[in-house]
Length: 213
Image 1 (cartoon, rainbow, N blue to C red):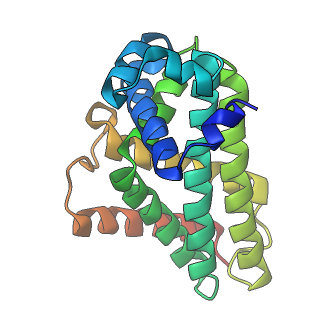
Image 2: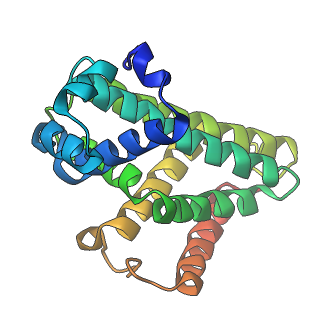
């Protein structure tokens, strides 16, 4: 919907370069501050070329959003598959660690999400943020449902409330890891892997005591 057919006719490597360059610009400056001129300058193409692939700035932004969500979806699907035989709380731990690793591998994706959280003028902002939360909720719900079937999650726990708690804690953890001034004492930004894993273990253990069987 957002990209023109001409974009998909490009070699895959060129498509990726366009999206990654635009993603960096939007994640650093937000939707309003992002400059198409700077994007095409970094790409070394004429400004008119970008409009052969996308109708306007908004359509480029929306396509980048779908691209970023697809990257996250694929990674979590991989984590879910790789940990399917492991205990529920170990799966939660590895999901959060996968989030940390994803930020390292795709730093502009999560920064773009944070920009969207705080910039009200983003087109379809409410719908896009709801899409992210729904995706996260579906993923966590599936983990907890499987955990309950294994007898690892207390039957007395309201799954909707538990998913809300998990989603909030995991998202906040990644925010603190990414943005130093949001840290209220965990000192995650720039921390060594061992310290990050220790903090995750502490959080997951607290959650296990609350909702585990």
